[in-house]
Length: 85
Image (cartoon, rainbow, N blue to C red; front, side):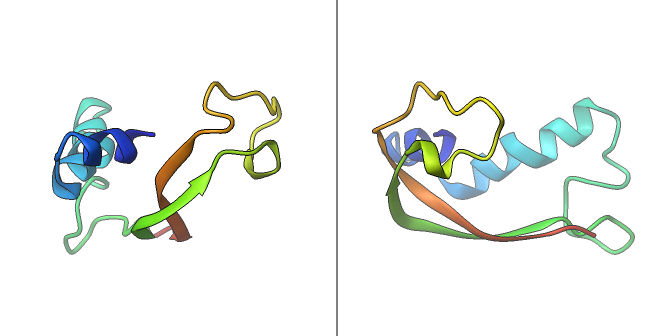
């Protein structure tokens, strides 16, 4: 949802990454181990296709409660893989 709306408003992926990783790490006091790609930091990465679109369906929801206000909405951007540390 964040990427779909940012993209619609012509906000770049670099700024969204800052919102979703760099700034939260700093806010939570984790900026010496997370939030950027540098030697000595945890390399938590995602492989992300910013162009692929999908429709939110109950079968795609990964959390226990299968209700989403976005059900039926077409969103843009798909995480293909996640790598931790």
